[in-house]
Image (cartoon, rainbow, N blue to C red; front, side, top):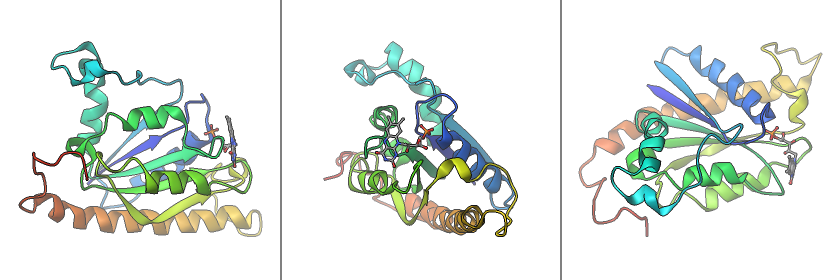
Length: 205
Ligand SMILES: Cc1cc2nc3c(=O)[nH]c(=O)nc-3n(C[C@H](O)[C@H](O)[C@H](O)COP(=O)(O)O)c2cc1C
């Protein structure tokens, strides 16, 4: 099974990328993970969506193809995002405009948010409430909020006497990643079921 992680902050040296990298390393330790890949939006490598994306053979379509192929070949996603102004950063929302059911449809996604302080709930609500309609990504019930992120997931150690919150969130992360893999296995069957990819209804409701 291949898992693709997305680091949704477009700040270079983002804390979100640190968290995503920690989770990628945890995934790679698992026997049921054959491959992982990371899409890192630091430095905003992905161009703004425009209508030329809908034209066959357009430059934008060609430029986006490697990114979209990365999504198409994934069985599940870990979507990591900071909370910025109580929102998901624009670079991630822009990337999401390119997602259709061909890339992300009927694949499970684990939402992971981070905050320098004690928030991080708003981007969870935003991703759960919006953005899945055309993409048809299926966010699993479990999510992770990494609060006080600069003190968390800085290395592999897990010592509750040294940093109890760090040890706790790492345990929780293992649980959430395991849940994601259980869903990833089950969703393979869902994608193979008849009538799931119906050309008449690409846009959700
Ligand atoms: C533009 C901006 C807006 C922010 N707004 C919030 C916010 O609304 N709530 C919050 O908890 N933290 C906020 N923060 C702090 C970030 O959540 C925190 O620094 C996060 O770890 C940054 O992630 P990054 O390093 O991956 O960009 C903000 C940070 C930035 C740069």
